[in-house]
Image (cartoon, rainbow, N blue to C red; front, top):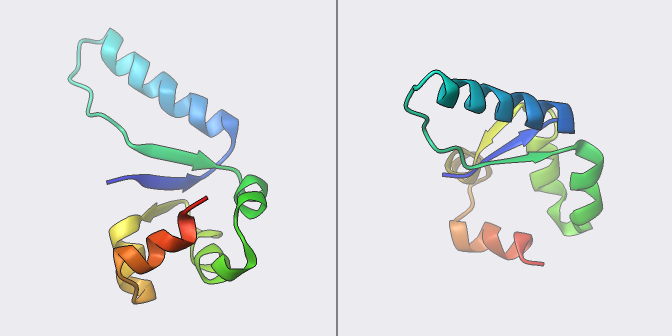
Length: 85
């Protein structure tokens, strides 16, 4: 599952630093499938027809794709067409 997080470059590097620390400590690191997006960047890549998705995710720190599909009442194929570039 891909996790989309609203955050800055500092948030991205803080997450990477946590993972590096776990590796240094010899802990088993679970792979992360995270996309960090700053709000302005997100608005720049989305078209106006994607407003519903923008409104859903803009004030959330974490968004799980499967939860978003359920809450928006969308199927993966119907929502994926909004994300094709």
